[in-house]
Length: 385
Image (cartoon, rainbow, N blue to C red; front, side):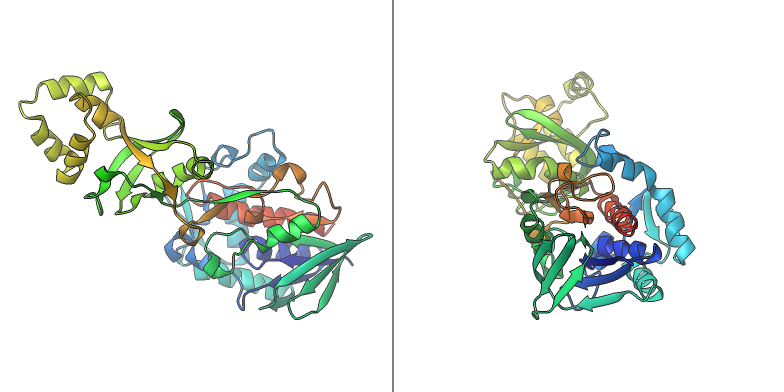
């Protein structure tokens, strides 16, 4: 019987450990925290939006030619829903978002812990893996308390750097580098965008639905429809979080980054121009339709009295992204071209990866948790073979 160690007790690691044991492997799960699944309890504001019925590789940072796309196709939302329900947790759908029926992340945590207990999995909590080495076909892990654990195969599922208060310190990247892997530079994403734009000074607390576009060096790189939440520091809201996936890295590289806001995406510039030309008092029109603070922002951004451009393409300069402490996901991580479709390393035989430790990130809406669950399962069943 193969001895397999899983490092990381989040959803990817717990799912991997279960899949190993359910397929005949002898598994030990190690987590640096005193309790498993700390970060999972924060997801979806504690409700745990675990997947999305509208699932596609297009919502991730890999394309259809990468073997990870097949994982998404194979383990689709229906597969995950059936898995949970067969194991004893009911689910429900709100629009396209999938949740546990209880609307509590604790239900998912409790189910995963039950699966681990049913398989009598050896769990070591409160002990960090400080070093790893490979000799022939055997891995040796050194723990913080100086214990050494041997393994025939190793699964690294330690997560990234987002929410470091939950134990996500990027430690898995160090283990991956030790075993010869390249780790892409990491950035916080699904997070707020910081702006020193003076026009935003009075916009704190305003919420408005719009089309937003990410502009890098004057080129559009992404767009999203949704509700913008203006803060004293800049821009927030799910649509902004999704844009951060395309802006965080350029910001680190000192590129010119902006968010363009279209307050009336349902209307062309020509249609808007006709309506504005009918108005005797454009400023009153702005206040009626967009509110006083947003009307003031549009007036502040006017160039040559072009209201159409200010309403349809209002540019906000972006100076920074928020920190890992306030980010939902890490962009960057173990290079995905060094990992095959079984989630096994192409560099070190018997080494597997799952979840956010890989350079995989998806948009808001359950995509990152879905990846954690299905990549953990895929890594686990293949490690057990």
